[in-house]
Length: 49
Image 1 (cartoon, rainbow, N blue to C red):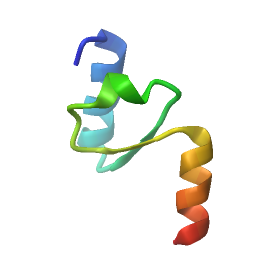
Image 2 (image 1 turned 120 degrees about the vertical axis):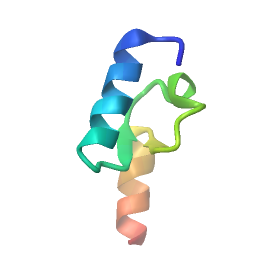
Image 3 (image 1 turned 90 degrees about the horizontal axis):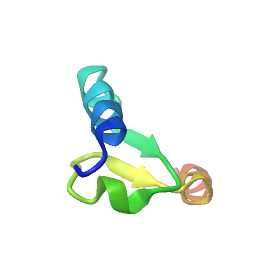
């Protein structure tokens, strides 16, 4: 990851068994194995569940 803060967030999510990150900077998480959503995308995904 290019951005240190994003890498910290992704690592913290993994360490706490959280598989989703909601962000406005999806491109910063391109190489992550987490599910990455924009706020609107997350709400759409949540409504489909």
